[in-house]
Amino acid sequence: MSDARALLRAKRQEARINHPYASYSSSGQLRCSVCATVVKQASMWEGHIGSKAHRVAVSKLREKELREEEERRAAEKRKAEEEAIASKSKKRRVSEEVEDVEDSRPSKSKSAKGGFPADFFSDPSREIPLSNEDDEEEDDAAVPPVANAEPKSKTQLDLEWDAFQAALQQTPAEEEKEEEQRDAYNRATVAAEPELVSTANEGLPQAAPDPEVAEAEQKEETEEEKRKRKEQEEKELIMDRLIEQERLQEEADLRVNALKAKLEAAKKARSERKKKS
Image 1 (cartoon, one colour):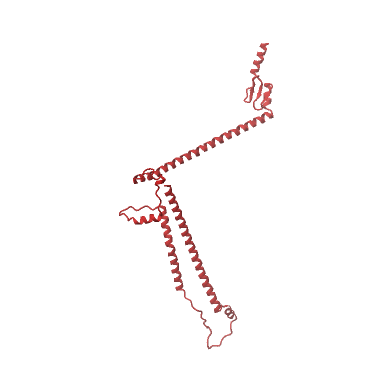
Image 2: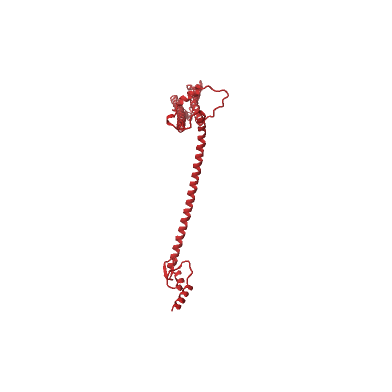
């Protein structure tokens, strides 16, 4: 009896299905790992994998594997981008720290050369009060120029100040030039009253009036109409000049205001730099 059971067991081992989705339980039952169903006999395996339920389960499994693969690749790509961004930010931070160290070196050497202790400016009790810009300008004016001294390089603030002064000096000059042109134009204008010249032949019998000539004479303007028309033209010319002067004045005011705003911003930036230093 035991020999018969051993033979049956050996026969079952020989008939095992070798398939990626085929698995056996501890009791030797054939199972489909995709469908999670038990296949009673090995001969029924081919029919099972050809069934619609098995094919649907396999397609769902493949879709799941593809989705997981895409998610894994996206996670790896996102991780690589984050590492690249972190590396760039680290390099930028290191470069900024190096620049800060290089910027602080001249100030330290200057303070050491002047005889101040290293922590002199960090101590609030030893803070030097900032003087006004007028005092600085007076001090600069009081110091006599040194012979053979090297010219001091102008900063951005000095260049903006020179441009502001040039604009202030240029505005009155333009107005004076326009006034001179207007006076020259007024002096060059000549006004005269219109005179009527008789074209009739005196002492000769007058011919019959031509109807076309009579109609043309009626259409001609009278002296009063001509005078009014000239006055109107002169008024319009004066108004055009006034409008042009107002436009030029507004443009000059806008330039002055823009330069003033730029100067205030430069002063504010310089005061902030002084506070930080």
